[in-house]
Amino acid sequence: FELEGEELAVGQGDVQGYRSSKEIGESHLFFGCRTKKDWIYEEEIKAFEKGGELTKAHVCFSREEGEGKYVQDLMRKEDNAGKIRDLILKKNGYLYICGDAANMARDVLACLEEIFDVEGGVEGKKQVEKLKARGKILLDIWS
Image (tube, rainbow, N blue to C red):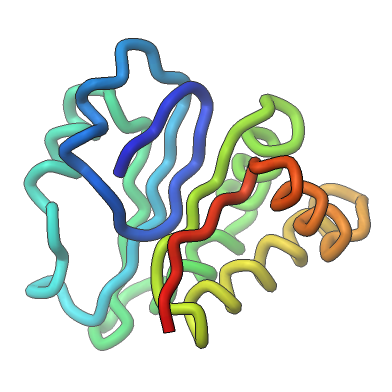
């Protein structure tokens, strides 16, 4: 996952480029896959978190027992929703969504709309569209 500045990452991207960032702000990674066995870049992500290069890795597995089955379940948690709102709306952060367009990206965008509407007191759908137009929400999705 490649992050610069104060960013929040959702999805799977280029982990190797991450270490080349000279200055990074607070960064959160929300990552989901089917099973622990499918968790790519697990060692790198844990090392980033341990080394302080990644503020927090929020990880879930849809086919295993646990608190959150999907990325949006983790995002909806009260402390995470507040952090997302703060980083994106108040601290001018970026959000990268990487994954399949048909389900994951659609559901994560809908979750953001809820977070910005309910948590942020603004109309969520318009806020998400505005952030996408400004390049603050970037999509790397496929069908």
